[in-house]
Image (tube, rainbow, N blue to C red; front, top):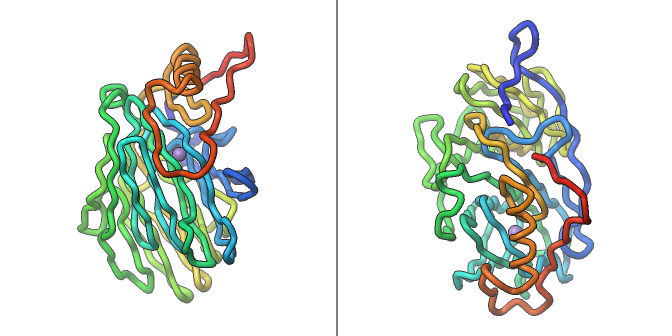
Length: 306
Ligand code: MN
């Protein structure tokens, strides 16, 4: 797919895309902003989930049993609470607020995610997927935990650089196509501007509070698609607000996204599904108390399209 979208008058795209409420694991409702009927990807970002903020008290919280991934990186940005990650490489990592986990699935990995037994009563995180380009999508799987990201204070915003380069800083997170991701947090009304790369497409996702971005009033549950060709972004918080800005070079390949797999063809998806459900190829996750997830098989004759 080609995400170069310009309005007829050559004005950059500006559209509001509602997130879908979706169930993650057992009973946990999350907002899914991508993929969207009007928009499949922003750069290599192909899947945007926002969980919480929610009160999980002493309860089970998040609980997603072992499942596989291919052809992507899962990017987790922890905002409130903790999540315990376990994977088939043997990594066992608790992620805490202001930290990033980046799992590179490559040719195939499996993992589980759960609230640890001892956990905070609050939970909030963003989990995004990054599609891997062809030359890297069969790479060896990897997992990286980033406890420290660059922080810049600007015009009343605390800006954390999660991916890429901006404001004179460079994030340590390792990605395979030109991308950026930034968290903007304000405790009160604030106004700022940011230079953008006109070769990138961008989107803004408000997580908490209210912001005005390029004149659009945004709250949680809406992704503002900013398109490509912009050199500057104006944003305002009207009070305590947190938002994420993501962007990247338009992804040049057609991807096929099915369940937890990013692939290119239906045959690949069918094969990954078969391998996972047969207990092959994706290794095992040790220590998770519960069942592994079963991949839904494609109904006979159904074609999935990129
Ligand atoms: Mn996963």
